[in-house]
Length: 114
Image (cartoon, rainbow, N blue to C red):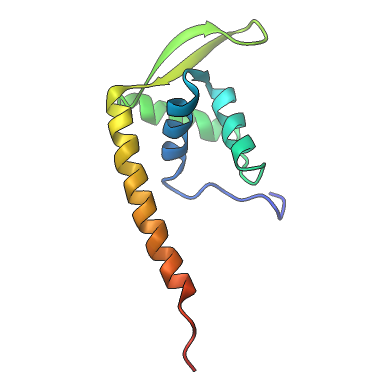
């Protein structure tokens, strides 16, 4: 992976997928991955294997649903949508992420004692 690229932190991909679907509406897997990369200004890179494993996991938890449709390039594709349970989970995950990232930020701001 290139120096300026970052790996997705464990546990954050589900949150980013849910947020993307909540903001954008139904998307296919490739579209979700590209949107996350675009929003990250290409800092995050998601391969198809990574995104599809997350989509299967979210489907199993019933936080998203799927339906077949036609993509922009006229190909058959599975489109994913966030469910009511997924919106509730997104709210909980967002609150947790904000709390944890705030704690990490405070720890990183601590000055070293000599």
